[in-house]
Length: 456
Image (cartoon, rainbow, N blue to C red; front, side, top):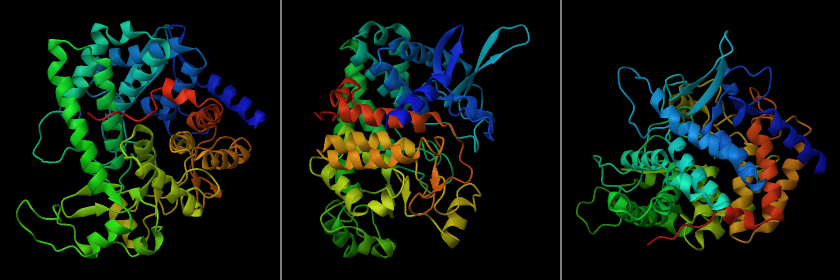
């Protein structure tokens, strides 16, 4: 383990991005053969595990400078296809460029340079959660209460809490607006966004002072958090009892006093689900909408829901039990598979558009992602399954260092290094560091705000 950790720390140091002489982030990958130019960017979601490590190591100034820089970059929003993004939308990434005269410039990407031109929704949520982690680790409430930080928080909430033409408490987002950033049929209300939204709502109530100006946001955030929790815990949850309920649903029912309020069709249950779902376990489905339930198992959403308490008492334990009983499918030879099962055949053709980067059991379509090691370990520790956390860490430590820290792995059980994976991927290395730290210092979870949020 020690050589792997030392190499991971070396990679983290090499990945630092400096602006005006100060480190302000980390590049996604230091692989010189990385095919895409934006792997030299600092992505907000990618930087989060790096930032957690810096906070635990007492290097909080890097995190503060990053948070401040993201606030300043909001002014770089350009129109996308003639439409100006909302002021609360934060960039997906940024990079530092040096001009011929030696002057440094920072360029932010709000989705205008991204494949598919999708603005990231999770960047807003991760910025809030990282701000809370910074405040909890340092006690620097003055920074969180600064004019610009408070304005950013209010603007993000004005985007997330605005009224829309829907009756659900979940947050509606476009396809490709979070970690699954390619066409994967998760448009609408994906679980990962709901887990981040839930945690961000709680964090905002912690970060916004109790003033008249903030009263409406704090009140609305509290009420939205409560109804969101009730909705996800009831309607996203799937176990054998719930599956039998859906299997016997009547459809086309009108009125308020009906069981099948979303008009789910029993015929929509995929063939693989009844035999795959363990008797005494369960999980939160990947997406939910009128007439539509996405039965796929999305690991990050389930793990974040467990960490932040969106999964109610008992559900988190059963989610980890599903990992345990379907270990070969969900963990295999490299923690953790992002999505199970993969789309294949005609489904893959229609849902992904025959995406050449997303073939079955690769990349986001059933690939294994080492970065998910840290939320897996955090979630396992939250429900007192240290044995599963240690088992996953042992697998990762055995391979990642030797394989040169790949971005992702391919195959049903993650045995193959990803066909198009970059090496020296920063968040693959930081995931190992964090997982090891969490196992040996459980108090680190609370220090970073990685714990259940109270629902009032």
